[in-house]
Structures are given as C-alpha cells and as structure tokens.
Length: 311
Image (cartoon, rainbow, N blue to C red; front, side, top):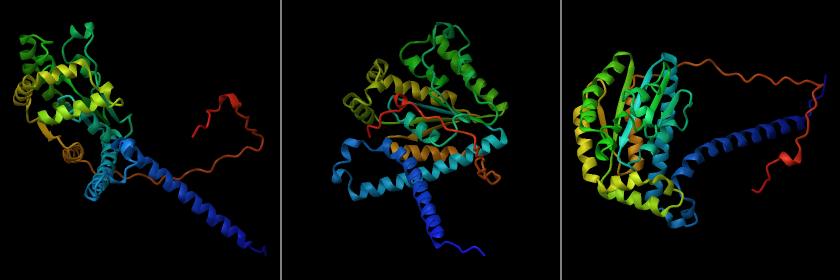
C-alpha cells in the first residue's frame, strides 16, 4: 500500500486557500465599480470626508443597490425565459439623474438582453420620416428589455420648448402617441415611463458641479444651458405631457430625484414591482476539465507587444 505524503494535504489546503482568496478579491473588485462611480478620489484622503452617519447611510445604499441588482438579474432571466418585451422610458430635465439610474440598472445585466437607446438629434432624412419611425427599430424583440434615455417624448419637451417643431406637429404628436403606445401594448410590449423630478435649486447645483469638474464638463452642452434659462417653459411642457399622455396602457410614474441615491433605489424597486417575474430554474453549471495536448508548445509573445507595467 502506497504511503500518503502529509505534505500533499498541506499543499492542497494552501491551494484551496489561495483560490478562495482570489475568488474573494475578484468579488470585491466587482463591487469597487460602484464605489468608483460614487466616490471622488479627491476626497478619499481625508478621514473626515464623511460623518459616521453618512458612512452608515452609504453602506445601506450599497447593500440595497446590490440586492436590487440581484433582483434585476432574476428579472433578466425571466424576460429571456418567457420572451417578454419591456420598454422603460426615462425622461426628465437635464441633470435630473436619468443616466445614473440607467447605469445602475444595466450594470450587471447582459447587454444583449438589456439595451440602452440614446438617440441623437434627427438628421435631415429622419426629419422627413414618420415621427416615430426612428424609434421603432430600437424596440425590443422577444426576451429583450430596452431602456430609452430620452425617447419619442422629445417632441413634447425639448422640441416644443426650443421651437424645433411646429404647433401642428406638436398637436399631431399628442393625437398619435396614445395610439402608438396602445398598439405596442396590444402587441405584447410592456411600457414603463419615468419622469425624474428635481427642483430649480438642485439643477443649478448640479450644473455648477459640472462646470467646475473637468471630468463632468463634457455633460454640459449649449442646449443644456439654454434649457436652464427656459426652466418655466420646460415646467409647462412637462405638465402638458404628463396630462395628455398618461394612459392605462402606458402610465407615467414620477420619481422624486433631488436625492440621487434614493431616486435610483426607488426607481429600480418600482420597476421590479411592475413586472410579474419570478426565479427561473437553471441546470447546474459544471466546469469541464481542460484538454492537455503534449505536442502543443506555447509560443512566446514578443516583448514589443507587452503593455508596460507602470502600476
């Protein structure tokens, strides 16, 4: 009988411990993605950057965000399994937090299942098309979810306020949009519409932040600055839009968005509550053993192709 070498057990245990450590490191690194977006490196050096109450609030935020993102993964699996089609529309003033909410929703999802549609201003050809035509190609097929970062409601908002459409085109939009959305609903497309609401004072603070932060200045456009000047016109346009396009088949939901973190959590939680998803059973995943070929010789990579290890 072959005598067992006790050193083998020690080696195996050390190997398992190292694998566990690497696994945990990888997990923490994934979580750091959120921290990188939430924390500015310039304030990390000061221990007094956050009070104990603020630190506890942040911990609670991240705990809830991770939990809700786990539910979004379950929603994604259900959508793929059932062939459900979901459209989520995000509207709101500039700097209202739409993009931040969309990032947290899509962060852990498969981009082939959950897509973001953020269309630029229409070109000359698109201006002569049926108004909804350029949006139709972005609608979901079975087993897909599409998040519209602004949508066909541009006509009710920016186009109206900036006089990019005529009065007749504006009125035709409100005659058409309920029928368009009812048609989508009848064909099996679920539509959720969110308006992110912020105050005059909050938008000014966020714009000032963008002006003074070189990492955010790209977010400011001449159109954003002009929208700031026309605050009241946007308010009136928003009120008309909510009144004239709030239908049972595609209702509007208003997200109180002065507090960005609360807005994200509340929006995600509400989105999940609007879809009758449930856990989908998956077969166990077994990692196959790697095939080794004794004749294979790995070729060295030329030093000139290696990225310098500066860090």
